[in-house]
Length: 112
Length: 109
Image (cartoon, rainbow over all chains, first blue to last red; front, top):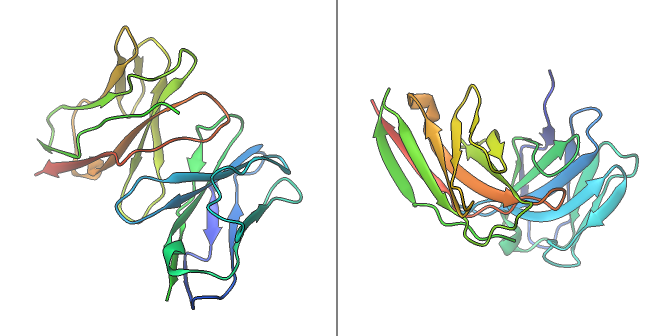
């Protein structure tokens, strides 16, 4: 069956540009997570949704980062005025309930 | 969040068992121990999880110490496709997973 999909898979942005990263979770999954993974590091938690409600955004590194899931399915992570330190792989994961779930392939963001 | 300690890397031969250790001495009583692995250019893949008892599935076995301060992921017969970074991550529920740097497992043919 279909897993978690993310688009685009690769994104190159100039410093200062806004970017939007999309996550399509597994159908019916209530929980959705965003993680950021720097090169050579493990993923780091950014934010968590239960259906359309954003229950935890404690991991978002700055107010330039914004996530939404308006209808409780597809989610978008937006980064405004990108900086070089935002370069990373952004991973989305979904699960029926709880934090153990299925990850997407990630979006590799490079900010020049 | 519970902190974890794993070896940076381990090496094993193909078709031999592999034991990947993880220390999580600050784990809380309700945290499950999850193991994920990540192949190059892919997202993490769920391997196994447990609370107190040892667990088996088609991918691996998980041995949990009696005091729950450590666990070992066991791959019974490693193949080249098992080469990946392995993460152990205690988690209490719907609060996201906390990953360390993991163990880079190298499999020699």
